[in-house]
Length: 109
Ligand SMILES: [Zn+2]
Image 1 (cartoon, rainbow, N blue to C red):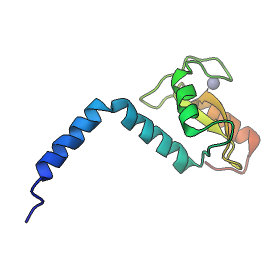
Image 2 (tube, rainbow, N blue to C red; image 1 turned 180 degrees about the vertical axis):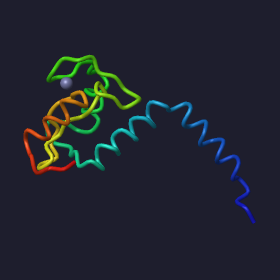
Image 3 (cartoon, rainbow, N blue to C red; image 1 turned 180 degrees about the horizontal axis):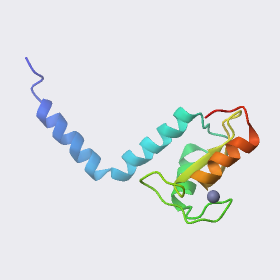
C-alpha cells in the first residue's frame, strides 16, 4: 500500500523548494564545496564563504566579470588549497585551474 500522503509530501516538497530557492541553492553549493574538500576555518564559516561568494562579481586574481550557471572560462569558483582544504580566493575557472597547477603540479583535480 502506497504511503497515503505521498502526493501531499511531494507537493509540499515542491512548494518548499519554490519558496526557498535561495536556501536550496545555498545548501547545494555548500555541499558541493564539502565534497570537493573545502573546510570551514575560524576565519570563514561556510555561511560566510557563501555570502562572500554571492557578493563577489569579479575574479580576485584576473578581474574578469564572473558568471554563474553554464560552465565556461568565467564561471565563478571557490579556490581552495587542495592540501589543507582552506579557502583562498573567489576566482574564475581559468584562474582556479592555473592556481591548482601552480601550487601543486602533482594534483590531478
Ligand atoms: Zn580569473
